Length: 356
Image (cartoon, rainbow, N blue to C red; front, side):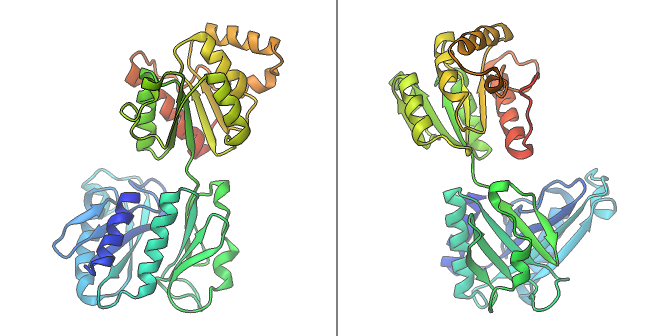
């Protein structure tokens, strides 16, 4: 999405034409969820996706007609009729897609400001919410108006003149609660929760593979290793922060200064002693997730040592170990996939596979 917003801002700056097609509501099983966006160009080209198949093709065709009309439209597709058969999408789902022309002749400064601020908030990763007025919204709401709120619920930009209607803020949920998209009173709320920072302790093969996959699914990556070459720019180009130093001392500092409930931590060091040292500091921390690689026997031995050092059993019970979903992983890529799958589940579903 960040790449798409960057391209959209370039288009607006260069006064080129496009139709911004956004999924604003879904029900049931659908190929994309609310918030997915696709830009359609006059030559039929596109950036982004609404899930592919017949729905996407039909939206593109309707969007091309919107270049001449200049009208914002809401398209509703039921995936159990003509838009489902060809692609096997017979699941009873429904998608509502807002197609909003952004044309040089009609694009006002407020539109440019809106998408500039949206790009900035998306890049910052602090979280934000878009409130989009749908076609069936009652007065004084105007179809197609958009309101952009930052993580604290402050209005930072809008498309559409006038004072912010009170009804728009009535159902605004703080993004820190990681709310799902919803529709209330004819308004679609499209929240983007704060990005989670993933601290990976250990820059070996598993750490490197986890970082690569986790970055692709929108985690901010921090890497810690006591060896410079294992926490290097070359090895971790995606990392927002690379920390080289003694594992225990570095974690003690990070726990005191940085780690809070926005952090997930994965311990994948090169040995039993380093894993135990890392868990000693991270298990009692405020991190929302702590996971440690290793066998059940290794887990038992480390937990016994840590309890002897004063770490409560209840604290250790919250640790995800052995880390990752059970998929029969054997190779490094498989282990990384299982770990990142568990990270996604805990982030998106507040799942807790730790007790197994």
